[in-house]
Length: 437
Image (tube, rainbow, N blue to C red):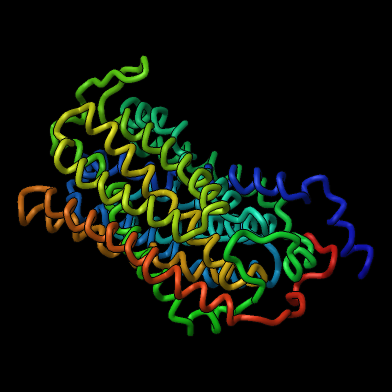
């Protein structure tokens, strides 16, 4: 090993907790690309009259490219390290929102969504993959804390964004927040490092049910256990994405959006209150259920959380017309949904190993893109029926099905696979014993 190669390992940033914090901040900076989107839909439509369904196609494009290209970006990370992937990702995220501020046609809006998706996917996939590599014994917690940055990262900026849209217009809001978020990610990207190869080849501690076999992505996709997890992710992802993209529209149709709600000493319009609470709970659930799964097992945790999500969606459909219930129940829905972004990466890495974790978790993450295809159908179904009830019922049913699959199908299937998979492998090509590139 050359001295040049060894030098990065001396960096003050090259340790697990520092890398985790950097990843969380990067995730928080790209969170508004998804979770802040709902605030822009109505203002964009009010100015351009493109129709809400047409505008929401941009959201689907964003999610598709954010997810479906992550395996490619993950391959590059596993081979060359995380740094430049995140730097370029931050640049693309900034460019995307600048384009949104200038968009005078749906084509431009869709192009910006594509750029945003590529950039956000690069940042998201890299940070999650890096987290589960640095924390082999606490993958659920590490993935959860990192994903919490994405889930709760927009909580602090929801009110400023909403206020700026009202005072300065959505165009200025896109421009200002786009530039700030992009620059922060680019700067932090330069201090991201991969863990030493020894941590990947012989992790000192593993979570219950985890194996030590390192499977490539081609091996992984040939296993039935991967596809069971993929179907479960799609089932869970669809309902949550629908709520994320449509919450402002649902609140407006329920006639509660602007009704003042007072809870815990705070009074805000129901929609703003719900969005802020949802972001916080959507973030907290990721490390919480990740930590729980490190102790009681991934599938047991999935069953509890997924069932809670199904019940929450049914309750929101029935009681969401009351402003206080709308705020509380939407918070419950997001709390029971966000954990998929910690549980699935941890489960994939436990099952198929850490060496190719960024690529493998990226492939699983494409299920979010598949689920996003169902989001516009929510608008279509609501328009055809004149009510959100059918959308809620279908979403809740998918969550309950995923819960049953976790306990009665995935759990025995994954245990059988882990017991069969054996064999130690050599370090990845890009890694050397003390390499933290």
